[in-house]
Amino acid sequence: MAKYIRRAAFLSALLFLALLVNAARVQVFQAGTYDDNPANRRTAIARWSKPRGDIVVGDRAVTGSRDTGEQLRHERTYRDGPLYAHVTGFASQLYGSSLLEDAEDGVLAGTDPMLSLLPVWNDVTRSRTPGGRVVTTIDPAAQRAAFDGLKNRRGAVAALEPATGRVLALVSTPSYDPGELSGNGPAVAEAWARLNGDPAKPMLNRAIRQTYPPGSTFKVVTAAAALDSGVITDVDAPTGSPDPFTLPGTRTSLSNEAEGCEDASLRRAFEWSCNTVFAKLGADVGLSRMTSTAQNFGFNDRRLRIPFAVAPSSFDTTMDSAQLALSSIGQYNTRATPLQMAMVTAAVANGGSVMAPHLVERTTTSIGATLKARGPQTRRLAMNPATAAELRELMTGVVKEGTGANAAIPGATVGGKTGTAQHGIGNSGTPYAWFISWARADDAIDPAVAVAVVVEDANADRSDISGGGDAAPIARAVMEAVVNSPSLKRRACTTGITGCDAGFASSPTPRRSGWGRGR
Image: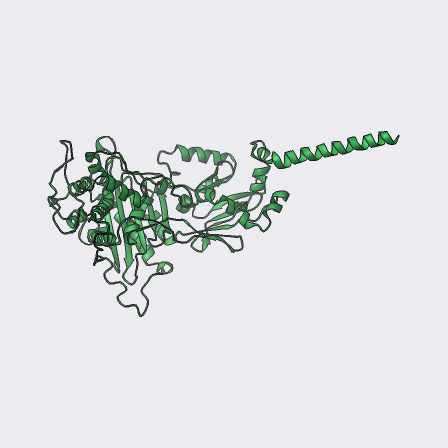
């Protein structure tokens, strides 16, 4: 009898062990497979069971959550949705998430291990920590100025703080309301189909995901290469440029919209955007040096994130001399995002250093304790500081004497560059109007803002000055919002500092002999 009892006990223990092994297999080793199964709604139910953390602009949250009382309980809401849509992105119960909602999902959903003291215990119990907060670098006044300035035309604005890389404005128009995609009913599916089928592409983030021919704004890069390489040693000396200029190795002639470009100095050519001068300069600098300068500014960088991915801007590395000449005036196949061109002008304003652009200031817990803070990071040196000083002077001249007069701001020094990007078959499309600029308040040490504006459907003729008419007023409004913002006057001159704003844009920094000049 005892023998049979022992056998039964052994069999029971074996069966119990098998149950434990199977439970471990299902709950531990195969948990991911079951969690990812589309038929399993528990993950979605858990994800939306608690309010999502907020994205903060300035001192207020621009997102929220609404308790629907349904199985997917908390639905995402947005304040001023179209204004911040291309910053926040959307968080949809049907279609996933995008932009900050996606890049910072761990913090916002409460799944980031940094939010919990005992993350392993949360994994075992399947409990969910309250979502954290994502504090952005966006300046509300600058964002509003950019959005209102575009007035629903197709275009984009990117604004940076030159010394830190903080993104102060990121606007793409036309925009959309991400709240339309939050829930899971038929209206959400209808909104998704409508937005994706709209030929104006309101969900496209033109500021970071659309590349354009930069037109004459690229002449800032060409000027930097010419100065750093020693092709130009005096911005007021004649350049020996003919008008028209025959592209190297071809019979094709390039002309100018402006007059007085023949043998013009770099200063004159920059102020009036002489194509012939800059095409010749690019060819004289050569492909290798032009490529390295463009890449130092950020072109051809496929790793840029802010924290979501940015489409790479491109500068061809395999061109012949004629193609290089055209690329040097922002034509041929050179392409740039508005964010990239904001980085170009920010580098000029920041003494040649390209700071890593970033959109998130810090992340915090739901009660405000900092999880991670982001400080300034230098990506690379785009040009010599002396070259940057000369370019600041040249850009200031564009606003004071040249094509960028519409960007002038009382009480501030403004530097800018206009541009027209021709496109379409035979350049038949309406030119894109560009303007890039920086501004420094008269009582500040450093520039407060660098801006790039592109307007796709500008009322422009095919000239290099159209950006001054369509895009420059938008840039001016954004710069005014930043320069007049008390929270961003951190670098204002303080009492007792002598000559703190002397010579910023009017006196080039003395050159160091032979540094970057090929001497």
